[in-house]
Length: 203
Ligand SMILES: Nc1nc2c(ncn2[C@@H]2O[C@H](COP(=O)(O)OP(=O)(O)O)[C@@H](O)[C@H]2O)c(=O)[nH]1
Ligand SMILES: [Mg+2]
Image (cartoon, rainbow, N blue to C red; front, side, top):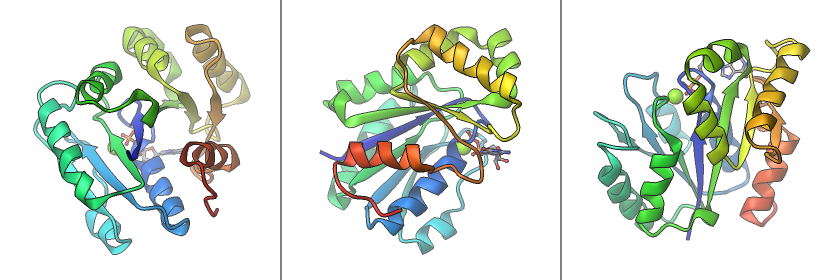
């Protein structure tokens, strides 16, 4: 079965930016990927650009894949089987509950072991997240397999340390990777992907 990279995180945290970087990384390594994007009025991926790179994108509109579009997500996963991608990248909407979406995938018979949940944490908005989104951030981080502390180049080292503390406080042995816009698929991210895919990926 394909590997699923589930890219969770709040609106504006850098999920789409990461997906674009991953797609380019995969294209260099000749790894076939497909994207499922669930946008609710969010800034989308440039379809033409992605198609030029040879990618197919499935977009699910008009609801959230964690609830109203759950069956749409499963149907799309079925359709993707014909295309036989090595990796399926899923970007849920920024408001989606990652746990509910992962449960949907598991109910559809997808092995949790095949899913890697990357939670993208925007280091520049920690205060707001902890003030108003604490329940969602804690359930999101608990469900994650790895947390990328993103926009690190904009956050001072104090804020970055606070982000690490927040993550460790919620999940003590969570792998944490520092990322920034200029180096999203950095050595650590590339190493993780290599481990997951179990073969050499060319950087
Ligand atoms: N400075 C900086 N900006 C970033 C970084 N990652 C994403 N962005 C910007 O943050 C904004 C939201 O990113 P996007 O990928 O659309 O977030 P999404 O809503 O989670 O998909 C865009 O303007 C990105 O260019 C980063 O590491 N550093
Ligand atoms: Mg997005």
